[in-house]
Length: 420
Ligand code: EPZ
Image (cartoon, rainbow, N blue to C red; front, side, top):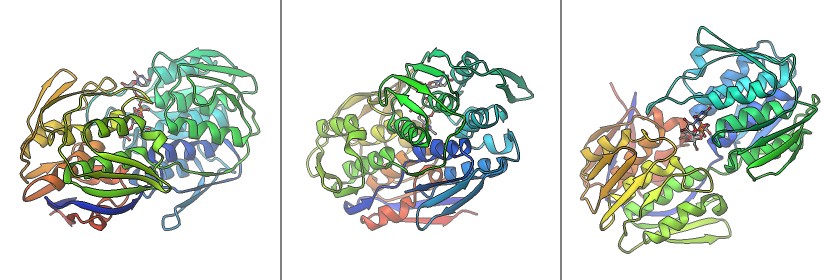
């Protein structure tokens, strides 16, 4: 297993090219199952999770070709050869569960392993199931697999009990193939969901209410393969924004979409960062003090839970105390214990972290526990005095494209080494 070795204390200067969004690429890949023929995606990020989704789809019979250098991917779904997504693949990445929506959409049946939990706790799929059943899909659980029979599928009006991103994606994948009206209410409004809506519209589905909490869909059994570019990754962009907030310096996040980061930008400006929108992205500078700013995560356009760990790292450097609350995942704080090994002063009370800054972070050996927790430890290592070793960085590779190369190009002293 690889680890990262970081010599902290170096300011960051220069440009980074923001990659395509992991959480958009995955649903767009799943949507390719719905249309016989070759779908092509561009601006596809080079991530482990993208590779995993490619394997899940190849297991169904798609021919998936990913040109990593060009960032393009073709997915030929002419002939499906299986209706099953096996546990061995689904257990490694929850988004594999999108295969169920894709299979019901294309084959009117599917057998997909229930996704497990994750590093920070259970991740239920009850909203997905209730939505499928509202569409007339019969759902059985058999030895850890969800077995769906959608012979009697029909349009419906369904209100999601929570604007779940995954449930919205899965239900959209099915509704886009039902030639009757389906109304989905209280859907997720994340940009990655809107990207899927636009792709399904291009494929031939009629969808009204794009970007709002209510989507009216009239689908078709005759969806066509399309070409689609993956939107930029707002969480990668936000992570680098927090990095320069911690180390000082000035960087340009090329290709970032400011509209997707409004809350993170607002909070960063409040904390003392200088953020300006430029013609090719977002310029971020920090040359003054860092002020403590409370944050409470929320569904889009609120402050993203995927930026919560990075914000705690940033607030550890601020002049004063701040409170960081995760309302989406109350137990998503496995990074706190590791951060404290680097000298951060954080006390937990239920889903609220009290961060007492400024702390003088000092390098130490720490361990990644999940994707965004790893990112937070990298940020802390960049700002800490001395050397930080971060182990189990396979978590990072799931969601960050060439992180150490991009940081090194900005002036960080960071290397990846193989662990015994
Ligand atoms: C997506 O996960 C993202 N993953 C996550 O990003 C992100 O943290 C999350 O949305 C929230 O924004 C992808 O897009 C691949 P949810 P998802 O369903 O779809 C509860 C990252 O770091 N819930 O919106 O699994 C759930 O327990 C990853 O890139 C139910 O109760 O998230 C949670 O509390 C981590 N029942 C809340 O909703 C359900 O059926 C949000 O979950 C579904 C969800």
